Image (tube, rainbow, N blue to C red; front, side, top):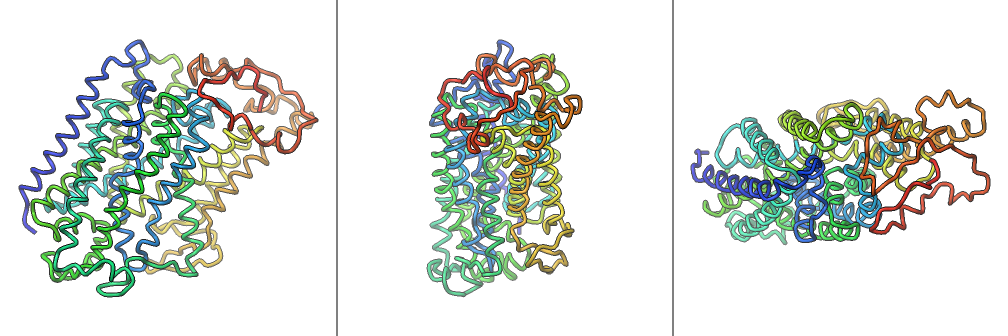
Length: 578
């Protein structure tokens, strides 16, 4: 395939447009937080993001390179098809559930990052532990974006995919440094318009190409390959359900999501933004599904792509740029590919900014440098942007499938962070001992279940386990959901066991080495670090723990306050110790 100067020009134009918007947004809001809270302004944007920009940026958080390219890939791959393209429905449901149950409690308390409630209740050590799976999730997500972007560029200008991934990562990382959440939010608006116009303009031309069979016919009939609607065999029902639950519930506890929630002007707005984004995710997935169906309905030997087809060449993960490149007129394909390239680039900054925000605030500031200046925190964020960008690039270079990276990005978040978030927000009485036990149990069960995408053999062979073509054992049993539930109930059981042992006097107070039961975390225990603004939450000073004798089972385990938040921040000065 010849080198296309026009394609390179198209990419450059769209990249410059995204960068220009980011620079403009950074310049427009350069004085935000100048009173000493610049780092917080970078993270949550002054908490004044409105419905329009907020709806766009929350939608664009999910609708990026991994979402578009991955959905098209799933529909195209024979034996999977639309039935296995779970991300559009799964992530839309996760946004709906996040808006119904999680957005209001988090925004009402005025947290700055997703890890703040964990450090408030479980202490800074546990916050550090939870940062690890949160970081890995963001890195896998960014890697999926870089991989998709590199694949797109390599198709346009015919350069090595590894070189295109590295170049794309450098550009996206550089752009992330331009500004904080304001720059990310405004570029996300441009991103959605680029995807919407670029893909929808290209779809009619691809459908009308002579090499493409009617996608309505190929949906249920085998022509060039198996029908693209796909099927879910009886042996794979548990695997399908496990992956669907992972995408649905694993899509909630993300800093990239809560960064938008916490930047909303009110708790009610945070909920509305979640619902708008859920609808936006479904709408933006339609052209990707159509492109995947077109790829499955094409006689590739009748196009310039030639023989064999993308499946045989192991280029299924690049089906979207391949369809645009070979089934559309030159000027249309360059516009579509250039638009998608620029669009997916602006999704990478969300994950990198989220990871650097959590590290700078919850690890560097709250755990090690409580007296660090605001300028110092900002510089820490800038340095970690480079480090995390490099890590995501390395993962993208080693990945074999965009959709595989996409699933992996939710694994640790689903199994470890989601049950912890349920406990910290809605279950009374959980403490650091239970949180650590739940963390370890979930992690061990996930690792011992193996991972084909990482060529990791399982140590536990669940029912239905089989050997694939790469001599890697694959689990059919929903072991990921089992690991999540085990982590959740372990947290509760160990927490209440520890609470009973200390409150009954079975164990002396001096053995409470984590100060999780005998004494609450206070400003002194947190080394005078402030988790939230003082006008949002007031923490008790070493409030004593008293045994409770007359509580019902439901009142003991259910934190009803989490379901009754109002937009104003509650006063926690009289909250019972957990």
